[in-house]
Amino acid sequence: MAEEPQETKEEGGGEAQGPAKSKLSIKTLVLIGLPLVLLQVAVAYFIVSKVIEPKLPETKPVPEDKKTEEAKAVSGDDLSDYVTYPLADVIVNPAETGGQRYLNVSIDIYVNLLYKDLFKDLEPEIRSVIIERISQKRMDELDDYKDQQILRGEIKDDLNAVIKKYFAKKFPDLEIPRVVFSKYIIQ
Image (cartoon, rainbow, N blue to C red; front, side, top):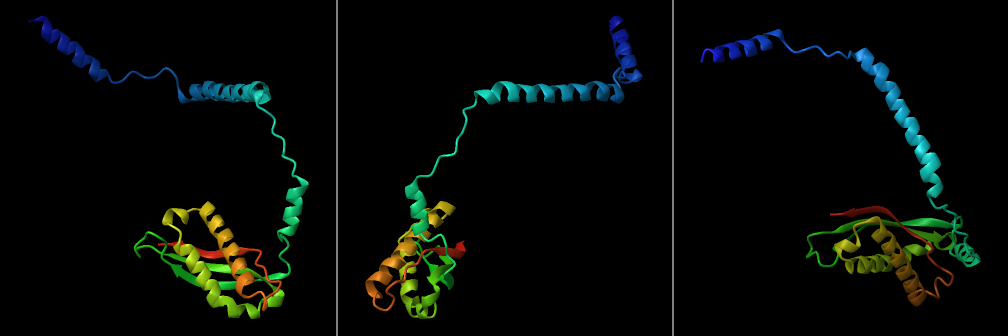
């Protein structure tokens, strides 16, 4: 038992001295650590550029067929003869929402300059087509960018079909080349 108090004295004496100082100072760490980090960066660059990159397959641009070039020319990429006809705030309850959710959309329809003034007569029919198309869609068919692109194409096709079916005499050459959403809010 006499030995036990001696051990506690030695332990207590060791704590009184405080923590031992590190032999490496900050200056030494910087002088050694910085070159090591730079060396690692150089080795990593060498490995990537000389070993890994040559093993990667080369990517070549896919040449476009003449058919796709002709289709682009016919599709009406040049919209200089067109103006936009704004159709503001079409509010629709999508399918299977029970009236709890809605889509508020404003649409700009590209119309030939010749028909801009006459196009106002079609607004009720256009709104009807848009409401009908959106009300058939479920929320998961309206919620991302890809779905918006699909919906724009469907609305454009529906509008062109209605114009050709019911208004061919009044607007013989009218075709809508593009439909753009200027506002698209899902609640």
